[in-house]
Image (cartoon, rainbow, N blue to C red; front, side, top):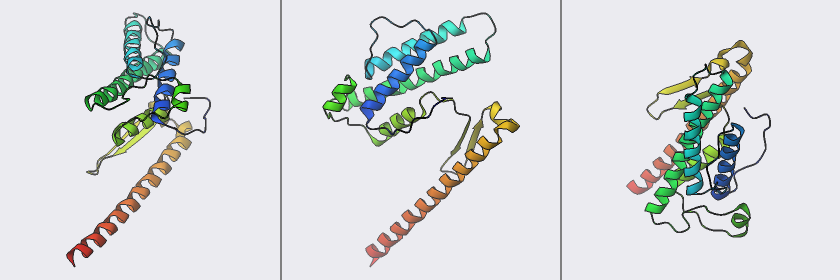
Length: 205
């Protein structure tokens, strides 16, 4: 986990993609994976294609070692897989933008160019949500995760270390956050039901 938490919010998707690309490149450099030639330092399609290949190369190097992997090495490999997967998802967004023939579909701008020139970035709500999620999580290790499906299925994943007695405060925090989230969605569904009822009554008059 990160030793420091910064209280910032995502300003726009173009800057978020640049932040993500920088985060992934820094992690790959920290793991001393040889950088590809002609390193792209931006946050567009080519940059994430390069990061995907870079992480893939790192996985091949790490998993080809014959000696038993330490816990630290296993965690590094997990981050490589994570970067490879996320970079592929982001490349998919750029390809979808191309297929929609969107103007200014790529993100080949420096931070100064993004700040100085407000170029439109025609993302769908789902694409924006995915970028925001990737940006907010970065490469943080997820200790506990609960997903509640629409059909009522509840799936919880917990890291073994989070089951230790010393991790009880973390489990309490996760439980409290889950309760708040469920209560919020319950209220939201109630509001939607009320609005639908009002609209239905007015239409039926």
